[in-house]
Amino acid sequence: MAEYLIVGNSVAAVSAIQAIRERDKEGKITVISPEPYTAYCRPLITYVLAGDVEEWRLPYKRESFYQQNRVEVLYQVRLEGVDVKERKAYLSDGSKIPFEKLLLAVGGVPFIPPIENVQSPYVFTFTTIADMKAIESCLPEVRKVVVIGAGMIGMKAAEALKKRGKDVVIVELLDRILPMVLDSQGSRLAERALDKAGVSYVLGDSVVGIGRDASGRVRQVELKSGAKIECDAVIVAVGVRPNIKPVEGSGIEVNKGIVVDDMMETNVEGIYAAGDCAESYDLILGQKRPNLVWPVAYRHGLIAGSNMAGGRRRFVGAFPINSIGFFGFQVVSAGMSAVEEGDEDAAIEVLRYVDEEKGIYRKAVIGHNRLLGFAIIGDIRRAGLYTGLIWSRMDVSPFKDVLVDQISLPEAVYPIEGALPPMNFSSRKEIRRFGWAVFPYSYRRLFTGYSARIEEICAFDDKGVCLHDGVDQE
Image: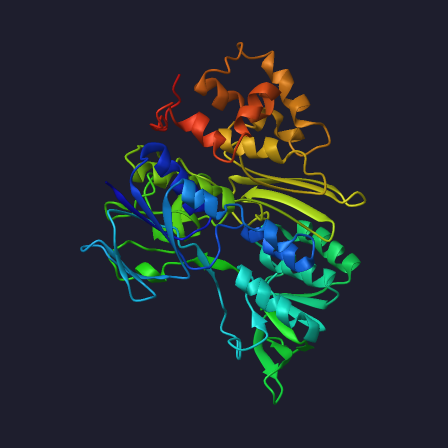
């Protein structure tokens, strides 16, 4: 009987459990969970803090899921190290667990910049339920909060705190809001939403120190520019990095993340990685990189779990896809969405449509006649079409001029059909050639059934064997 050890208990772990049980009904599955909770939706913690969602809604898997799949969960235990020769995992409680197959789904850890007095009371990160509860407990004593970082976590934290009646100041090192997602023009629309909501922000500056009074309470932050901002609490939200510390020095290859191949296996046979800790293939950049988004973690776990149980599924790549809303501002982005003119080589072209009065912004980044990224603000109805164009790697040059215009994208593309031979949508080659935008709605629904559907249809046969070898096949 096979013995599977899964370290981590979030979305990658859950999809791996499901994939293992599809192939192996009897193997022993043990899950190491650093938190005392069943799998829960981490993005929802800001909504709980804001009072928009009740805490009981956070878990998306209950104890019954683990019981039905005969999974033993060890709660409140962390991975401290891995012995790849003895095939044992060393845990924070001093125990050692042997394994036959190991999945590292240890997630990411908040990055803490070198700020004086950052490790002290009333300074928080914001990625777990424990973080949320710690912030919640101090709110009665807090009037003003500084949020360090204008990324997605920082913006949602700012919104939640503002809804709780707190004064909020955002400090961002770079010169724009959502700097990994938006360019300067898109950021101005986000700034307008913050202004309207009464949230202050400082761009192009950084916090270098946190000042306290004699009792140890936070009283101010000091910026690199020399300015000081009075506050009662600080939230550090400058980003999350892959958690590679538990495997450093073990012989498992690490870079920015735990390096995996297209089967989600590390350089050590039988040891896999999935989710935020993994460094896998980026479809747009053409190289491996961490991709810390929920749908990618799900597919990582699905593929890793299947292969741990004897499958032959392969990860054909992914790219970052994000959606966020705050203070009435809504943006969906994917791929190289933050690129400005001149940031990349001459092969990159940036197209924009802006209606500032209506708050609508559409941006497309094109390289070698393919869509490499987009950002859409306000009217986000084209998100699925743009995402499909990136996945399909379709040549967009025939309708590039109207890609971001007011005309609907299907209207722009349908006229091409008459100039081409009849399309056979059962053919993988034809699907890739013609692209997502012109698929009949009945066919497009196949792609949106669940997060991995594009990959499953376009890359694997009915047995889960990869069909993608760089050449279009019939």
